[in-house]
Amino acid sequence: MSTKALKLGTRRSKLAMAQSGQVADAVSQVTGRPVELVEITTYGDVSREHLAQIGGTGVFVAALREALLRGEVDFAVHSLKDLPTTQPDELVLAAIPEREDPRDVVVARDALKFTDLPRGARIGTGAPRRMAQLNAYARAHGLDIETVPIRGNVDTRIGYVRGGELDAVVLAAAGLNRIGRSDEVTDFLSVDTVLPAPGQGALAIECTAGNAELLAVLAQLDDPFTRAAVTAERSLLAALEAGCSAPVGALADLLADGQIVKEMRLRGVVGTTDGSTLVQLSTTGPVPQTHDEAMAFGRELATEMLAQGAAGLMGERAH
Image (cartoon, rainbow, N blue to C red):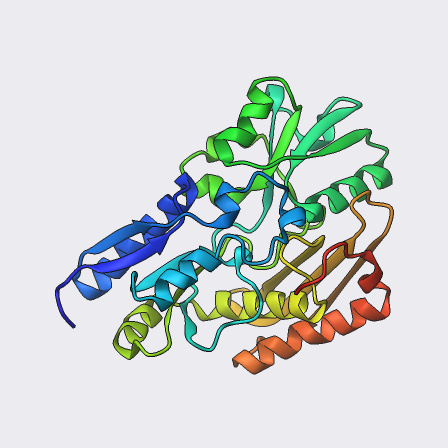
């Protein structure tokens, strides 16, 4: 392989630059080649509309993929939860590195925990999935909260709390960890309370299918357990025919006996944003050993959820 710098396509946000920088360092270590970050603006970065209004699916991804196909960059890094579930034939998910913490977290005024927020507390989030589960939990436990739709980067969202406009915001733990701001978290939300978005906390490294040399190098960064888990989660999302801004949560985790991984558990949830109705199911089975097995794992749980009425709870359908 040559010593010429590799070009990595990334969104311009602080979080995207941080996680792409981490991948760039790892690729440099493996290849001995410098990696140059190429900043690309996506439609999702410039639009001020809420994700459900602009379709959600692929709005943070399309411009990066176009740059890949035009040969302007050699590979691209995405937050996996932003990727549409259909993969273009010309592009390959070359690596899915080990996943960061998939949980959602609360950043609240006065260092409050979620359950300690005052009556009438206003909680900001950009995700219908979070709204559905937070409101369902509040209904079940007699909490009086109002979920408020917000957009913007981490600074903007936390700024709503610092400025007194909101009592709390809900964010992904992985994002705050990657930009070194986990000390601002006031509460971690258990996945038993709020299931994350499918693929949350994981990164996707994508390149063109014809670049065999680079594909072989990037494959060294792949974590097979993370790949199996997120493939099952995304298969569930695809089988529900839901876009990435629909109120769907999913998490696959490994069940171990000591140091020996025994099984994989997949949990899924779909709900109305007011929390009045949730369909929440889980399944457990052998850890998938192939892509097709992981896909089947997700499809089977989705079929059960659809039979329980999940289809009628999703505001956005995939296109």
